[in-house]
Image 1 (tube, rainbow, N blue to C red):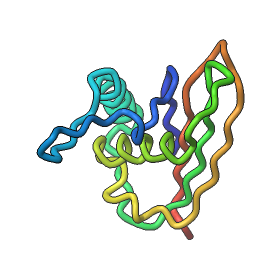
Image 2: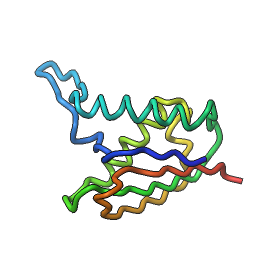
Image 3: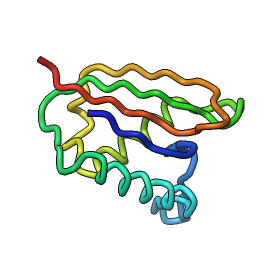
Image 4: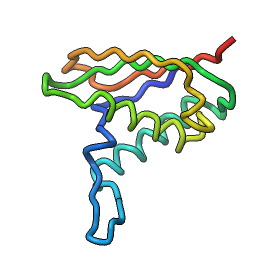
Length: 117
């Protein structure tokens, strides 16, 4: 299965606020991106759900040449896959490949998930 997200993926690790009491919550811009991405992923998955080990391949197209926190981008994508119900748990990913390129005309991500045979 392939899921395509349009627009710059926002790192999940750099968009959290922590209150004095230690409560964590996402910044509005990140939460808005996540909610859009979850909706898009659900629509494209059409009810498909992985509950077995998978291999994940992420293609990240970045809108500018700024340094990007790749583990943070991967983390954000895993949040989307879990929240959308596509992955029961991100621990099901037994192998992952990530490719990042500069593409100002088409920022976004493509996520390929394949069941392990």
